[in-house]
Image (cartoon, rainbow, N blue to C red; front, side, top):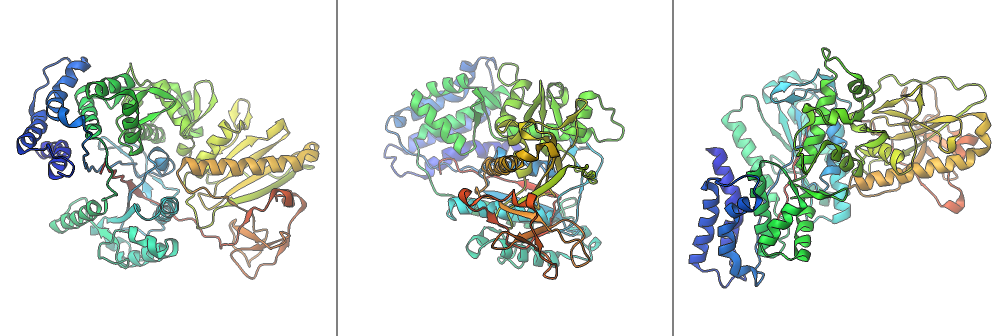
Length: 624
């Protein structure tokens, strides 16, 4: 019954909004208004008495009264103020954080969820449920709640830098397991609030801090504390306050548009409901538009507008397919992430293609065609071979062989990275690209890998037909120009990105040109990744790892800063470390005066923080 009420409310929303807004609608009489309202209610109760494969008959079911009641108004382009809220769930696993902002770029709201029963900086246990059943063996996330929170704040600041504060994204914090808060005496809920306040004021300028939805009206107490397993009346009240805050803040700048654009979107959604699929062909959309009186230019404008609002999704690589929403592609990614996690279960026997996907993140058509990954497919409109085309266009996967695709976001972290000695006569040199605290970094590693393999044409290093090293934090390529040696790309889990080259002595004469090519290719790849992730595009900062190896310095790798003449390296963490001169091979990474200056790292290195659960919610305004 509740579901029916929600469905009725959703369908009636555009009609009610229309009836309440009488500006510019002189022909709107009470009689017509009653007919319009009755028409929307009738669409909920009419039985489906036609062949579901007969699109013309289907459309007649939902269009007859609509066309009859509104035909007179459409000719004079009356305007409708129509308001809608859409929520998309990206999933709470770290794999989703790498790709969510690619699939749905217009983030207008983020709800960051974490347990009150554990510290914010803990590497939480990741458990994925499929149809209510645990789908994987629990494992430690390579991200902490605190890192994801920092990433969310940086992503919001990045969007504000591009679009201004007029339609600023919102951020809310939900702490669950309220009944187990005593299990974390080292960080009470009040201390978590204090920590969040510190992070918010550190990252966001004062004018941007209003994006945070507070439980108390101030940034001193921002967490909405809930017991979601056995909720009490107080928990429901807290959830209600959060819902009300999200609804009130979701008001965006109204946009005027022809009334029939609303009718087209409503008709499209009802058609998909009756067909039982979230994918339509372009011809079906054109048929609906034709029946609603669209000419080709206005239909194209309407489709592009709905795509801009992410009500619909369509891609150049599939020109004849229209998806109901971005959730279709998110669902397909969810299937693949779930499948990869199911392979990690101890009792699962892996075949050849499964083992490749599990160990190397290499996806095959056999997996895409399996029953476990069959959601949303349609034999006529959207088949397994189509999914890689979409994911490749988004830099989520990339070709690595016939019918094989590398999917970096599902790669596992290699806790013990091999560090073999440098062979005699070889040179190992590395540099670091970093964004300090000014830009989000999550997802850049994965998108950069896809760019290098696709646009740059690089190849993974293989031995006996098997890739040598491919992990969430390290991947090895062949050197460009077919030179002997290898190139390793390391991501210490979104703190910084390191590029290391092992060059054989016979290639030394090419090293200056090679270093420049590698450096410039990585900078372009990372800029492309930022654009793909819808971050503000910045030039990464060039630096090196601290060369100090003593008790005065930290035991784990961290960044150094360059002096003004680019001749000395100084530890960015400890003022007591000795400055070291750049080595000749390090100097070759630096641009020449003719190339201009790179931004040089000046900020203090900040350590990684992490995540447990994140729910991204996008509430999008249809012509509002």
